[in-house]
Length: 130
Image (cartoon, rainbow, N blue to C red; front, top):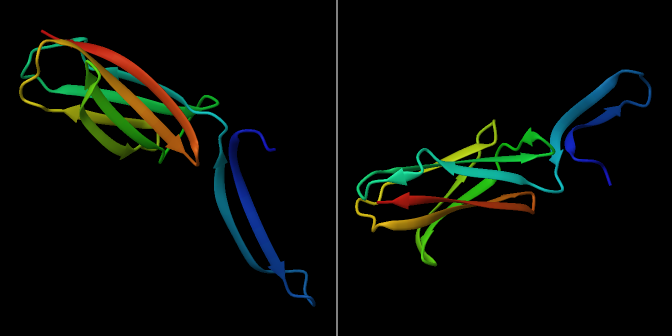
């Protein structure tokens, strides 16, 4: 198997009677065998009416993974309170602003579940509401 990385695949066709290429096309494909994810919030503690900005990064072998599917999940005491799925940008970043107006005091978890070409990665961070 090829190592992780970005590969340019080129296909060429030529006429039998000439040495010139008659048709050429290329495509770029990124191969990854595992995803690394990081997740965090803009603050560690919030007031009940404050928005929570959750940011995540998806990478593979130290390089950003653009267009990965990133699903954010906010939970408290095992109950799912919010989910949002977005695509990572060209730098492998994704974000979600959780704007629920009233949040009970306590510890919350923010999880990122990322996928790219069938490869998965996950990470969780916590934050508090006081």
